[in-house]
Image (tube, rainbow, N blue to C red; front, side):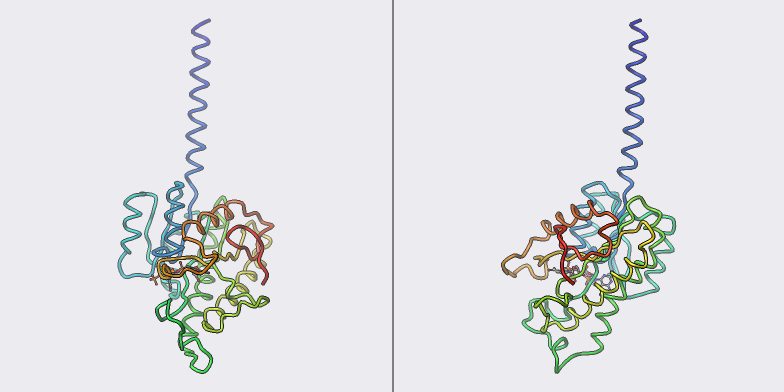
Length: 270
Ligand SMILES: NC(=O)c1ccc[n+]([C@@H]2O[C@H](COP(=O)([O-])OP(=O)(O)OC[C@H]3O[C@@H](n4cnc5c(N)ncnc54)[C@H](OP(=O)(O)O)[C@@H]3O)[C@@H](O)[C@H]2O)c1
């Protein structure tokens, strides 16, 4: 009788251990691909998802792997560093070919440019009416608008084959048309973010009959490295913004697809 009980107890324990292993494997199987992951918001996403045990595909456009990502990959073996300039269709397609068959639960289109001058410069003549630089306009559109679309198109099968099936576009309220926050000093940035918003809503509509969730998200005004000296009221530290975005992303459902969301999950006007 005692032997029977011991056997039952140990087989129950073995079953629980197997379940824990299987569950653990699934829990650890989530994968995020982040563009522009070597600084600011992208780097912080990589750090926080790596700390949660996700597989992180951290992409950058540099000729050699940036030190920040190399350090992170040393600390977390689940971080994989890949080169991908989102303005280069060839580079995007090449990485997509390399990652064919790899499910991507969450694709974060984060890479973006704000200015070609020092971010803290009071005004960028290239983006001011009267001295607008149209070559730079093309570059803004290539990186901030075409880039996220090229990446989404190239990796859509990876997203569709995953568990979570989410695409998040990091955009900005400086691309909002209905509010007074008009970016007159940064003409190209605001224009490109408005176009990115429209492209994102269009993508959400195109994918409406699938399980894929597509969301444009404003991270808030974030004190990333390049604007570390800014003391504007309401600015968020990068870890705080990203922590809140990760919580919001975790709760996304198909009903959110196509909504313009703030980092905390509230809905923004267009
Ligand atoms: N910080 C804010 O307050 C704020 C507010 C609203 C929206 N956003 C958006 O948040 C996103 C991240 O910006 P951030 O504030 O974290 O600034 P950031 O530190 O400058 O990060 C931008 C990242 O994008 C990368 N990148 C730029 N062009 C690229 C390209 N062609 N291919 C691949 N990567 C490229 C940059 O790489 P390099 O280092 O090589 O240039 C950098 O890693 C952007 O889309 C930005 O518009 C930021």
